[in-house]
Image (cartoon, rainbow, N blue to C red; front, side, top):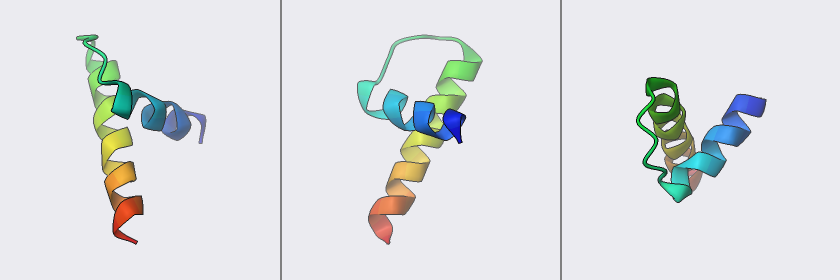
Length: 39
């Protein structure tokens, strides 16, 4: 659950960190946010 919370925090900030982990977390966070908005 911590990772999801972190991902959601990263999404709107749009950091320019190029690490793969970071980008993956960011994408997950944005996807979760979109899914929540659809409900």
